[in-house]
Image (cartoon, rainbow, N blue to C red; front, side, top):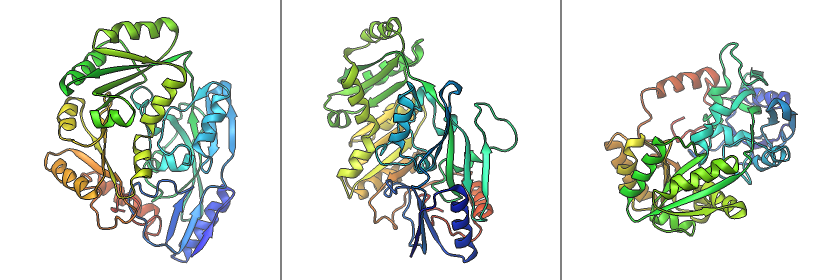
Length: 383
């Protein structure tokens, strides 16, 4: 097996083009920190890492945009922006080891997606290398760019099955003046969901609104059904959160380092479990807000929900139990996948019902990679 670590987009394109011309299969990644996420990449003849593309390409803080190489560590990007009191609030798991390209290729996000959105909302441009040996620029360094097809959006969530991300352009967000966490604890799921509904009906716009069942809360040294709210702004605004949320249930507040530590635990809810449980699986469920209670009731394992955006994560210590739950979810017409699984997972059904639009992605795959050479099986064993 040949291994390459290109140091420029042009070198990356040349490596891919040369391998494709010889019809060699290619395993593509950054630091390969999320090997248990998505599908199992079948053995390949060439391995390509973007880890050497690890520099800031362009950054002017006053423009609220930044361009960085795909191999830059996500935690390093966060530190660079924090020095200017700016942020990209994606909150991905594995942020201490993941690269920017890996985060975007896997479409990772975290608790603040309710207010700030996902990668598709924060990525404004991208440079990527194709199997034809070409470097393609999509988008730019302005927040609104409407010229032509935004091909960068195709790369987000493609798990490197279409092309290799070389650099990514983001819009950045100023950090809030202050932040505080409000924890509401309930004895029943019904009461927790009722409080969630009250928050959504109110004028409050929290950055994060997560719901944890008791086993999940226990993993973060909490108890009961826990509704976790993160709010940012000036002291008057944060004070209003405290007054309004205090009427909904038992309320605790976290500030400073304790606030930051709690949300690190939430952010790493899946990655900490995957690191500690070699045989475990994480199921991700996409649901409507009205079906949150029904979904959480069906889970007797640790489960955390993005209660304001409709994504739920469930931790299963055994893949057999995860597979049984997925089968039941498919019967109920819920959208669910086994997002993380053991490294030996070639025989598992990770994505039971891809949906009718999957045929469109198959056609796009054939256009970018007609020989099926790139990251074979990486997209949940489907592509």
